[in-house]
Length: 124
Image 1 (spheres, rainbow, N blue to C red):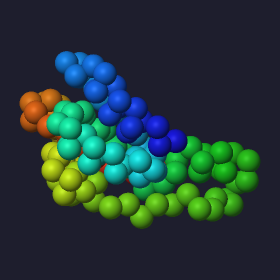
Image 2: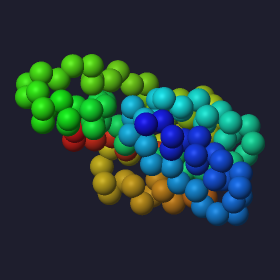
Image 3: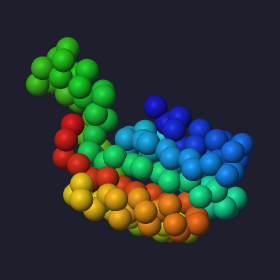
Image 4: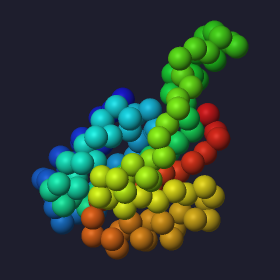
């Protein structure tokens, strides 16, 4: 966990003409999300997709499987990810419904700077 954001930064440095997309859960993103500042600093127009379900989903799944009704330490209190992206100087967009995604993704592709699309979901 936490590898996707810095790996995307490295991929964009190595391949500046390619589209680079980072897929991270909210817990994963929070482990190295500060690397968004690096992407802004170096003008790396990466698209960061953050799937936000307010939980460490994989850990919770394993707890539910092995210890039913005894989940602990998996609920997250997250920041407003799109506001965080804007604070760093990236484009921040929040998507709450599937039909909003195409427009958000097109905007992220066209903006010419790092962009973070927060995909809010209640699925975990």
